[in-house]
Image (spheres, rainbow, N blue to C red):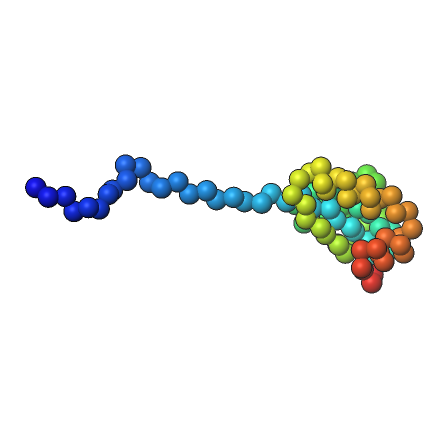
Length: 103
C-alpha cells in the first residue's frame, strides 16, 4: 500500500482571534445649560442612556445630554489618564479647542 503524501493533521489548526477591548472616554454636553461632562466606559451608548435617565447623581439636574466626543483606548488605565487630563482643563472653551471641537 502506497501513501499519498498528504498529511492529515490530528487536530484542527489553532486560530487566534484577537479582539480589541476598548475603553472609551466621552464628553457630553447638556442641551439645557451648555455644561460639559466627561467620563469613561466600555459602552458609551449605555452610559449616555443612564445619564439621560437621571441615574447619575452628578448629571441628572442637567438633562438632556448629548454625546459630542469619544476616544477609544486600549486599557482602562490609558482611558483614565486621558479622562483626568481632560477634566483638568477647567475652561470649556480651551477643552473644545484642544480636542478640535466646534461645539
